[in-house]
Amino acid sequence: MVKILKNPVFLASVILSLLFYSGAVKIKNRSDFTSLAKKSGIIKLEGFVSSNPVKSAFFNSSYKTDFSVSKAFTKNGSFFASGKVSLYFPCEFVEGFYPGKLYSVASQKTGGGFLVENGAMFLLDVEFSDKFGEKTFLVKGGKALGWRGNGFTSRFCKFRALCRLQFKRLMYAWKEAGGFLLALLSGSREYTEKSVSDAFRDSGLSYIIALSGMHLGLFGSLAYFFGKKASGQNLGNAIQLGAVVFFVWFAGLSPSLFRAFIASLILYLNSLLRMNRPDSLTLLSVCFISHILIFPNHIFEAAFMLSYSSLLGIILFSKTLRKILPCLLPYKTRLSLADSISSQCATAPVSIKIFGKIMPVGIIASLFVSPLVFLFLYLGLFGVLLCLLLPFLQDFFSVSLNFLYFLIKKLLLFFGKAKSF
Image (tube, rainbow, N blue to C red; front, top):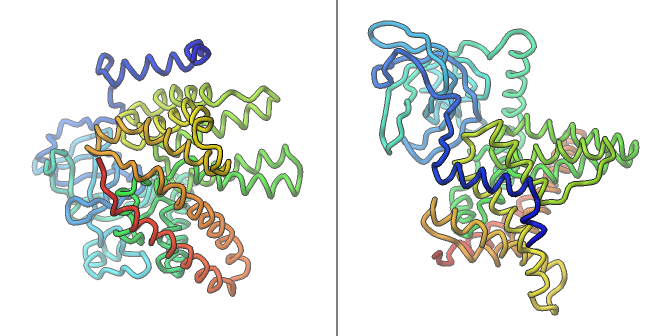
């Protein structure tokens, strides 16, 4: 404990946390919407989508996105604008090109449909809403204006959107297992069964399905393994970093994924410069400070608080718990159980504050579900790569992944019935 308290980087992160979460220091929203047009009077918005569309339970199961505004229109004329607003797109607008979800209404309203992805530019008919206490806009119609930027930037944004669309189509062919793998690798949950999503939440395992360091680590580890086998450690590290950058580019920047991305960059530079590897607490503290400097608004998001508190709990308490737990338990079971208990204890205050409850069943559930999800992810990644080269193996991987998914689903539904506190 004395050693921890003498860590200057950790102390700095603790002080910053106290200042921000106590309200002593206010964080200014760098992307706050600014315009002479009054929000409640706006009927049209021009700009570009600046986040991945995420399925929402509000507003008739719409998709929520951030939208960077360049112009706002009222009945009295047009106004220059800047900053971001929250938009809710109707499902039929976003899913117009998705496999198995074709909407004639969207085609009529949008002139053939459009891709709602990061970087897509639109002129949208909107309606202001303050329902559920959130000042936001509901999309009623509009037209596509191309992609953000000029030349290479515009083509790059469009290429990413098409890659994500094609990946959805590939995963759709793998049925329920494909929908689950899609959520794990891209953050898109259009094809994830609602009962499974609810079971992850109710069993205290939401962190597994949320894009995080686990997914980034698995993807990077596979790239490093093959890169090192082919060309040695130096090139292996470079290939691993390239894979990590690709994953973040493809999946998008969630708070937990960005934390893992910062850590990966630090460790890569550390290896490249032949420096001593930083201890886990220092690394987490550097990531925390860097994160709030780059994206200060993330600090109040649930994913940010749960991600950092979970890792902090594991770093501080897991090692001690491993010694306390019965020696009769296998080492890997003690390790997993200690990590799970540490994570649950550290995130309990955040869970109570945000969700009003904690799910202690997650401690036991993770022992059974996490290994299966790891196996599912590895097999899924391997299957995607192999099926691109040998398409005739698609049916084999479809059957294998759906069998694993069936086991995961049954376990989740079982643990999801346990009571929370």
